[in-house]
Image (cartoon, rainbow, N blue to C red):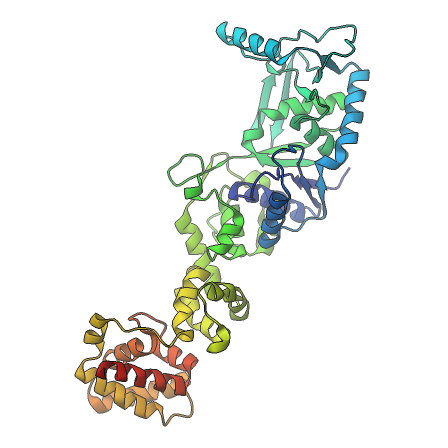
Amino acid sequence: MSEVRLRFAPSPTGFLHIGGARTALFNWLLARKEGGKFILRIEDTDVARSTQESVDAILEGMTWLGLDWDEGPFYQSDNFPLYREFVEKLLASGKAYKCYCTVEELEKKRELALAEGRKPKYDGTCRDLKEDRPGVPYVVRFRSPRDGETAFDDLIKGRISFRNEELDDLIIQRTDGTPTYNFTVVIDDATMGITTVIRGDDHINNTPRQIVMYQALGYPVPQFAHVPMILGADKTRLSKRHGATSVMAYRDMGFLPEAVVNYLVRLGWSHGDEEIFSREELIEKFTIEAVGRSAGVFNPDKLLWLNAHYIKAGDPARLAELLLPFLAERGVDPASGPDPVAVVRTLQERSRTMLEMADGAIFYYRPDFEYDGKSVAKFFTPAGRELLEELAAWLGTLTDTGHDSLAALFDGLCAGRGVKMKDVAQPARFALTGGAASPGIYEVIGVLGRDETVRRIRRALDACRS
């Protein structure tokens, strides 16, 4: 099969986390770069732990990241008849055998091997049995080669080899007839024509076991690329505190999908010193060989920096749509105030996340904020109140609240009073927003409009009097 075919095969036993999302992304990028196919397969053979809720969470996370799939989602649970068919083929050809050892017997063998300093693998008791034992429960084991070695050229880590004597005769079918992971993944990848397997390097020890199964079944062995794990900021395995949380949790924290994608691809892959890539640039420049061999370290500050960049460069109309749910969480109804698009334009430069933008936007929609006493004493001095009175009067005569008109008004007021811009702007900002930090005063007035600006200044002055 000449077409490049890659897959992402998560287990639906939880959410789509950062590590899984990066694996999916690398597979997706290579498929798009090579003009191949990206297949989504749900490995739900663990019936006890697999849930539809987890499936939905995985699909939602991939959709949010923009990782669209060409085929699937396929479900392993639909393939049980196929797995049984391949088990029977291996049994008939002598490449698998029935093992009647009980759990208690296997545990004793394990304890003995450990006591003697041997690797606790199956000792082959049933490997050469000539006759079946009717009515006796059994598992089916794959007959692994005992001599030589199994090697492969990993696209990331280079040549890796294992001595076949180290390989166990893996169970491929349990006593209840259900198949095991290493067997099902080989059958699925083989029958789906997967040409390249990109996955976490925690699967390296599974790879030789799977390769010998491909060979026994007569299927071509795919190329393998094992991606190093992601470490937390403390250089230990990624924890929830350091990023190992649901991809959708990042959406809820106000991150943009393009920022998360850009960040994930740079966790292990590089293209010179470049940091910021559009999706099109990633597809053009990505190669699996440029993925590093060492673990990536999750850096929340770097992700925040990237997110701030994408917010700053984002389309205000799109950001306004994304802002609405965050405002709703804060009990804010945008219909009661200025156009959210205009609000976004004033906050893009100041916001690292949509959460921060929502917090910064509240004053636009809630004019009933309280003034704290210390700030009143600082900004609403007798001189400050006089300036606000005059500012309100001047603003009342304006027909245009554009930047140039407001600049001329403030310049005239400052010149007439012999004061600096900050002497007018700071009391005005506090009167209009209830705080000492906000977008530029001209931007705030432009969004609020003349009438609302004058009303808020009058309200502030009334608060001072009371």
